[in-house]
Length: 245
Length: 372
Image (cartoon, rainbow over the protein chains, first blue to last red):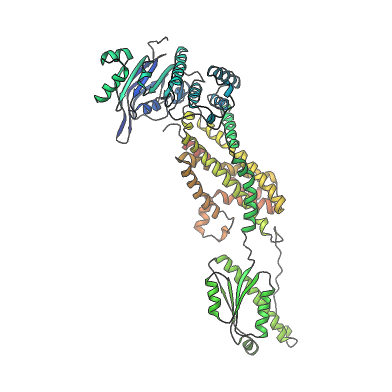
């Protein structure tokens, strides 16, 4: 994994308020090109809010944001051309087949017909889904769906892919397989921004930030964080941070 | 452009994969046409009446026979008590009471005029008016008859009569169904179009796929166009299907140019579908969207001139009705189908729809938000 020193996401003093509730409280961080950046935190810590703002789905209240080299306020559509997003909520069409979903998303990203058929073919082969090509999404297991959703988010070769709790509710083996896909993407040069509340997964990240109550409480490599908090696992680090609030 | 094609393709797949859709598209129009066209009629058949004849004379019996002889009346009850007849009306069993007082014939013979009374159930004002008109005609007719009989040969010249000849244009047989079918067809495409489009975007909100679309660089106008086109095609097809059924089942006249009908329908459907999509972008759940659609649909339909005459609405309501897209399209349909109107005849209504469509499509595009 070639992590460059170039920053591909730059966030400065990001604030998001819902009425009087502050979901993101002056977040400041950078993500380097090519790294797997873990965005950790308990439920309700503000992870999803931040990811939606970075993807251009929600307006921030204030702060400077630069994603993939574009300003999120003035070049929103440019940002969108260069990112992929897999939401926490399931994002494929239940009543369409595996192939129809790939074709549709490829189509709205502006891929040509030939590109779509080529990429969908290699994609389904890689995911072992060739046999399920014409099955409806509602009829395939959750683990497959999530792998497919991830691949669909990667279909247009984005510079950054945002994954919002991609492994929620799947078994450990499928989670492992999913992380293999993430590694592959990172090897291919895509920056991966992933939120999770499985602390074991954070060990797979190049760097992690831990959010507590809308703030970033810690940000570093997993090794350094464990050393800093004198903990043997990321679980311990997290519990110390969450208690200490 | 390519993007739009993919959205259209996807919408078609989803619509026809839904098992309930085909019956809705093919069965509903047939059922609606058969039921509504036959049921929604202004004609009064089977006026149920109660007769209170306290005179029991040849003249009063003659009058009653006139009513018995009419195909529109059914005499449900003969009674000697007005109160008894009134009870029947209170219970909703009769619509009309003919009250003939004692001395009817005697007064008519001696004083040349006599009184009888109609009591009409006017809960439905329109039908009460019709009952009154029908009954009065029968009474006047009988009046003339008895007058002629009495004066006989003595003074026929003193009876002057203005006789009116009727000539019914555009619907010479006064076939009510002919009048109803074009309007019901409008109703049909409106309901299908508004519900389909109204439920659409909000459904994607509910299942969460809208976020996945909003995170793509798709242009708003592409998205709305891609959503509109499939329902536009389905609704136009629906109209063609409905017209065929109307022709086969009710033999409705198609006097004007069918292309003119479809051109107007094409514009009209832009209004309805964009209106549905607008509702869809505002709503958060499908139920909400249904309720809003339903509200507008009821107002639009009741004020559309389908069941009641627009000309008899108060002035403010007629002004308000200028915002009712159904009103324009029903007028166009009736004018072109029944009268054979040309483009010049309907141009005012047509351009009104064009302006409306332009406005509402833009409103829907503007209101669709990719960023919250």
